[in-house]
Amino acid sequence: MVKRIRDFCGDIKVNFWLIFAVSLNLAAGAYYIKFNPALFKSLNHSLVQDWFIQYGQHHPGQSWWLVLLFALAFFLGVNTFVCACKRIAQLWPQRKQSGFRVFSVKISPSLIHLCFVIILAGHFFSLIAVDERNIPVQLNQKIILSEGNSMEVISRQVERYTTLAAFEGAVKQCSVIVKIQSPQKSEIKELRVLRPIYWQGMSVHLDVLTKKDSQKPAAPPELKLIIKKDPGVALVILCFAILCLLMFWYFPQRKKT
Amino acid sequence: MINFIFQYAFPIAIGFYLFGLVSYLCHRPKISFCFFLIGFISHTLFQISRGLSLDIWLINPVFDANYFLPWSMAAICLMMRFFSKNEENQAIIHSMIIPVCFFSTLGLFLPRGIIPPGPQHQTILVSVYYSIDIIAQACFLLGAWFAFFHLRGKDQDKLFNSLIAAGFIFYSISQVVGAYWAYLGWSLPMHWSAKHLQSASIWCYYAAVLHLRYFPSWNSKHESWFALGGATLLLVFNYSSQLSAFSFPKIGG
Image (cartoon, rainbow over all chains, first blue to last red; front, side, top):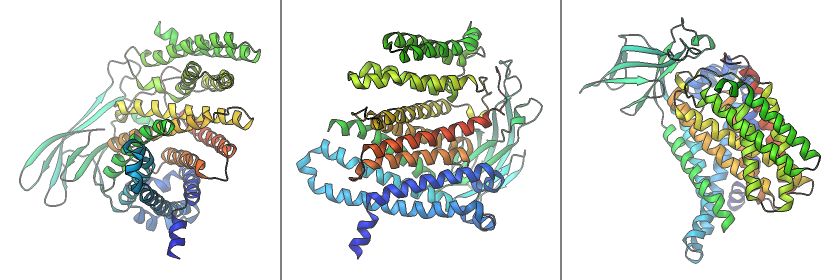
């Protein structure tokens, strides 16, 4: 019985249909988000379970795909992990006979799959455990952080296009100067859009609302601070980069061997 | 001069591509290639002029999907012409002028102006992301073109598989770069937005297609059908989002 379950979980046909189902499910999700943007907007800045309790459960016709996505992603993760482990277990005893190069080519797909499982896990942790606060930028406002730390915005700057006549007045870059205070010391740092501050396990991002109208010269852009602790993001980006490197190496090598 | 190229090089390129297409249909592959090459040079000048059209060098407009996609397809076509020695493949490669013409001509009807790069676009990651993403899309679409010929009993070397594998690698790289850019700019590597879910959907779809080879009972014809399905999905997603791009304020038309 256990063997049958293991074989089913590690079946590549099951894997194919699961990925295919995830793909279709994501396409359905894209459709629902496109036509219900107000409903899904808050999902980007809240825990998925909180969002579901507050909004999702009241709109089952628009949010069913999200529940299905989690279920499919879970089974895909289990299936991919079992497939990769089975293959590694098959290949490992042959590593001396086949030589390092052939062995590394053979084992690469399994490593790629393990990276994929870690990416899925990273996304999952980000969605269920991220600690995030969104605070509109106001000068001299003290923001209380955890463990006796605090942050204060002491100045803000908006840079606009001046040299390009065609873009004149449009917002080019925004930045704020913040004073970060911990019980031991205080630091002054510059925070810009695209250049977050990393501090004591937190990341602080500056976001600017770029509505179509905000590119007009008269309108001052709305800025907000995003303060977050995301346990999954580093895993996602790092493992995705490793996955790409492995694929970039593997596909040409597969042809040669 | 730059303005002149910006305004006219693209229609001129399309003109030459169309002459090339007519020559191809009249079974004149060498003349077709000459027109195609001149069209490609004109198209390249247009792509560069997009970066210079506002008197300073801006790299982001060079990689606008409407124009960079047919350029990438044409570039891949030229590379394949150069490297492929197989007569039968050469015949399919000559026919690649048809999708190049189609996507270039489509570009004529889409907005050609330049969107002012806002604060979240002041990074090289934007250009890296779009350029690699569009090259991947070009590989997927041309993969579907070869798959179509495979279904008709040609492309026995299954070049469509290689194009899809290359497209998948490029697409994965673009997803990493895009995730990093989204994280820096918006604090999220993946948004719950239609664009991000569509990208993830395409990535999963092609990941599934690459796994098809491990089905003993399925053959390359099945893979070809899936390659054609992927291209359809890609086009639906791409051009549905292009429609919303009409509403963005652009400079230069």
